[in-house]
Amino acid sequence: MGTTAKEEMNKFWDKNSRLNRPLSPHISIYRWSVPMAMSITHRGTGIALSGGISAFALAALVLPGSFPYYLDLVHSLSVGPALITASKFAVSFPVAYHTFNGIRHLLWDTGKGLKIPEVYRSGYIVITLSILTSLALTAL
Image (cartoon, rainbow, N blue to C red):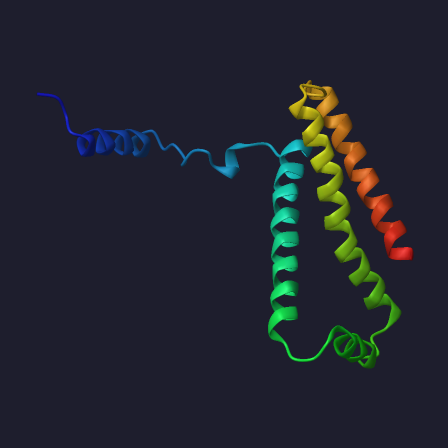
């Protein structure tokens, strides 16, 4: 009769412990690269945008008053231009980055741009376009 799944699992973990192996995949065994950082950032901006839109929609449904009331409330805070500019960039960058990187992913879905040099080149193009677009939107 063969071994049970639990026995096989115990053998697996005993061997990994004996050989001092890290949990796999473990972030410490990978060398950071532009595509890796961009993938993580793409996921993060997607989560942030989804969460932000959901929170804004929920607030619009639940909070009393109307949009002009809350707009006047923000105006009455008298925050400086530096905070307003930083806030505009903080809102525009995730939108620009997620959009441009999404277009990049759509191109990959067609089979184009999948060679390593092209992946890096398109990554730098996405980063550059995202920053320039965010700066232009912030200047409005």
